[in-house]
Length: 124
Image 1 (cartoon, rainbow, N blue to C red):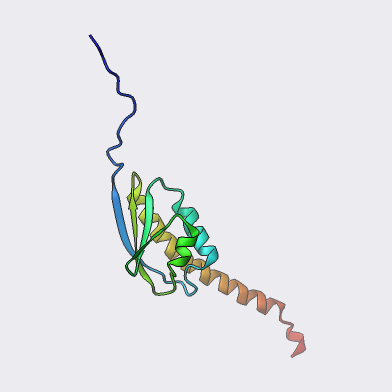
Image 2: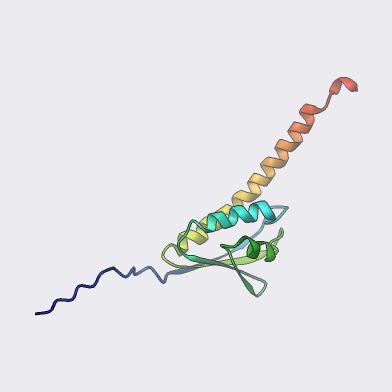
């Protein structure tokens, strides 16, 4: 009798897909540094992640693509993921965009505070 052993296992969630429409709310949009951080976050997932912006599709896992997508303040786009962790990927990237706006506001407040600290009020 021949017994054939099948190695490996098919993941039932391998073909999972998810998408979420988001809006860039921070004032500066996804310029070089936040685009790099966004891609670094996208690369932590096993899913293939794309951005659908104004009828074009860009890879969320390549910095150049994210920059070329021109994601400025107010831009609405869809994050689309396909793979075993698709839903987690789109949810995390959507939260990242919200967090980015808060970081930008915090940095601006910190810069203003530092300027005030350096100002010499004795000169008045």
